Image 1 (cartoon, one colour):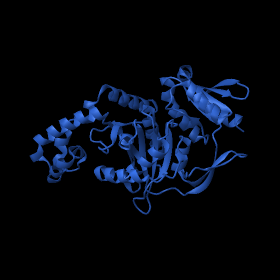
Image 2 (cartoon, rainbow, N blue to C red):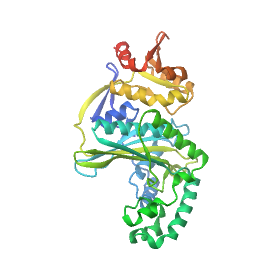
Image 3 (spheres, helix red, strand yellow):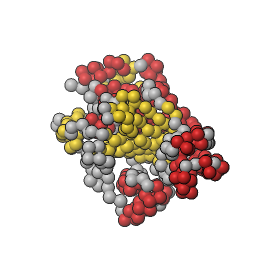
Image 4 (spheres, rainbow, N blue to C red):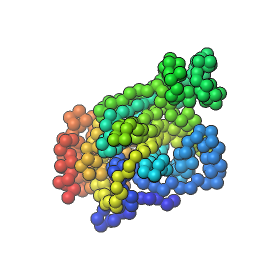
Length: 384
């Protein structure tokens, strides 16, 4: 498979990204690898055409190709984190998609919201708004759809003519209707979060807990339902205002069900976000140092602070490896040893409560406790 991965210089230890703008750098610091999406196999092309017509989602062919390439082996290394160039909506705007394949952890959802939110700040947008909702698992969606169908059927004569026609194809789409005539009817319609199963409710509450822990203001929007064909659990949207007005910078959420339709025995739970920039920053070839640290976290309190630690290091231009979607310390240590990093950053419950990080030198096994606020300065000193 051809990858657009940056070239590694062993002596100088850096990545040279062929096309670099602020959003690409942000993706790199958060752990995403730039790729060229492989071409779908023949049977996948047929499936993509069928599913794309059903759901009108341009990402389906690329999702199929990525699942086949990275999740089809007997022992796939999951989760995988990728960033890919999207299709231009206009001659000036550009899209980037960020995908995390193979994890159902709530922190993956929060990581994408956090990264997109920071990109909005990098773009100097004002009035940044984060809207979020949850459709839950398939059972949750089915329960909500039944209630929604019954509700709109009772009010079919009060709907806008366009929505009456839409009701015959997809009643869920009416929730996103912008007609003034449907506003009151929509507001009193059944909301998906009221039909979440217990596991779905737990997942959504964990995502919200992460957002609150990292200080991202959000609004639960009952009218945000995403793409109904493959959407599952979290759906979110980030808007902001620039000199040209208010626009949607990012849309994303969880999706699933494709792997089984491709003939795989297990589904591949995944979450993605698509970021659209009105005016892309100037692209230059940029050398970014390879990470010399691996961030390990243990326990829920440490997970809640992990995204802030990564953002602090990004602002200081210090890249770091991580496996935030993994809970077991053994798996994280194995990854760190495989990558042969000289330093490991460890945050457990004690460190998270004290706002510190344990920095371990892998050469002599010596370690030192460092305040999070002092971590960039400390690492720049020892990584010289």
